[in-house]
Image (cartoon, rainbow, N blue to C red):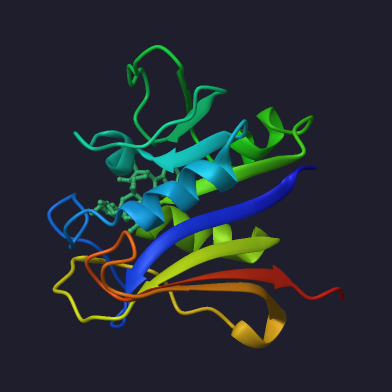
Length: 166
Ligand SMILES: NC(=O)c1ccc[n+]([C@@H]2O[C@H](COP(=O)([O-])OP(=O)(O)OC[C@H]3O[C@@H](n4cnc5c(N)ncnc54)[C@H](OP(=O)(O)O)[C@@H]3O)[C@@H](O)[C@H]2O)c1
């Protein structure tokens, strides 16, 4: 099985989305980080995150999770009816990224080997949130701080969590 990595950005109150968009104005430093860490990897996303004008995707392959039968997706995407099916289709990869949103993060957290989590140090209104998880099960192996003006309109911290060996 590949390394299962989740990648997300959340506010102090754990908001990740509002009206099927990000709650904040673009954060180039976070976008650069996402592009760098996901380079060359396949991505897995929920149907709502796929069905978003600002969707994120990988040139190397993407899986869209939906319960709808006969759901049609664009070229470069493949429909699956469960997270486990997406993992199965990625079994020969070294690492695969789960992109969200909330419903899919909730399903994926028990499988997460790594979590790349950007904390936006502000409070935002949201209707989708990054689920609480047991942080004692993970080590923070990297932490990058960006102040306002350092390619970001907000102070942010990008954490990399790695699941502790059992
Ligand atoms: N800040 C971030 O890092 C970040 C990242 C990604 C997304 N977002 C935000 O998150 C929000 C979307 O999150 P969301 O939770 O509403 O939606 P989502 O997780 O993107 O997608 C939910 C959809 O996934 C499918 N699904 C869920 N559980 C399933 C299961 N067990 N089996 C099969 N299919 C399943 C269903 O699709 P069907 O209804 O088609 O059956 C469901 O409606 C947006 O606001 C987006 O902008 C933020």
